[in-house]
Length: 565
Image (cartoon, rainbow, N blue to C red; front, side, top):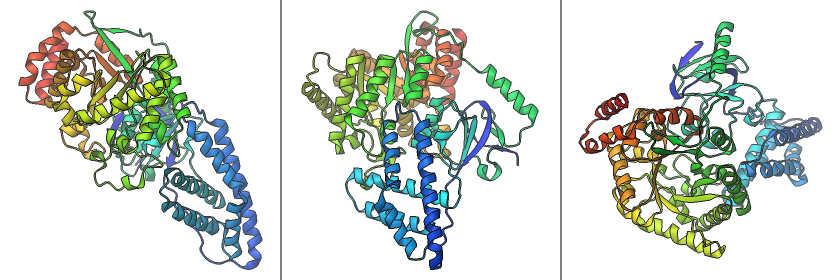
């Protein structure tokens, strides 16, 4: 079959050469060799090591380390390991036992990783991943098995894979990665959300995509219609090229501030996770950053980053966008660190496990270091901090106390950094009035709020329709949060997929939302929509919200309000 279908994650029509990313299973010969052949195995090993070194040097030369500050150190450490006489000596000793070079490398890999598994120290445990990555590179070169390195892409590409972890997805460069097709995945998993935020057209749950794809052949991804075409004609490719040129918005003319049709100011900020999204936020004239996802910097390191590295990244973002709201490290769920604490990896239900503030309570020094790095960055612009996955006032006050202690420690108490609570759990939604007494602002995180209110796993493709839900309960919570914010005279913002849903925009504005944070590539559409709406008309929704019982009812009201503006 040349055409397959799936679930659209990010719409678009693109073409590019297929790159298949799949797990590599090496066929390693465990048979003994004759003694006379050992010198040939030495030669094969030497060639594979030199090839591996060259590959790592090429990656170093081609990578931009503006946000991935840990990558350079990882690559340098791997090169040093290739030059380590003890490491090479261990492999040669196994070859001396009449084994092939690939068997010897794999044997040393297993021995080293087994020893790391018994270590409690997170930094040393992180070396395990380096050993696996490096030794598999050597084995791939010994067996002449191709390894796909997404950092080396330099032409229009459509990635085909079974799945992609968030850490790899975060590093994809939209300049070359034109589309992503996965055999599995859920639209509102963090991988899906990252692809949406980058504006990379994507299709999930495409059955047997790897089987039907051919490396380096051209394909067309039309995720508007949920189709991947692995055998396009010349005419079809030319037509897609014209569509891509028409979609080029390099000449867009946006103003930084956004107003409704009746001149009500709506602040539209950007969600940011990596350097490319900072550049996109600037390009689309976002009013600062409403959600800085700091976890992706942690995921791009092989250990908890140094405070100086964190500060460098945060300062760069603040200098660029001036007004930045940092979400404290929000790890867990489907977001894991390469050095994730071993005892937390086996949680039966990670979405309800050690996430957000719960993780931070276990790693207070990591929290304090992050807060200090943010405080130092506040010298260069307006900075706010928000607490993820908070469920109790006690948790919030604990973070608040640490923030004030670190401000005193750094002698930066003249301008206290505002601290906000993320309303994304049922507990915080019900208890919102109490949070509003102590918080400097509230931020509604609709992705997790929707998941927990409607009791589903957003990493499961079975619930993609629920993840996109406009269930009345969600809007009732939003209205209550706005009321609490107004009562205590603190601002309320909203982020997540719902905040950039064009159908939901009039409802959110009608309920009193005046600050939204969205993915940069959605700025044009959302700002345009806001400029067409009259807030005075949308306010008529407020007295109706508590009487609406179904999703169809709320959509019907929204359509009527849209037509009347």
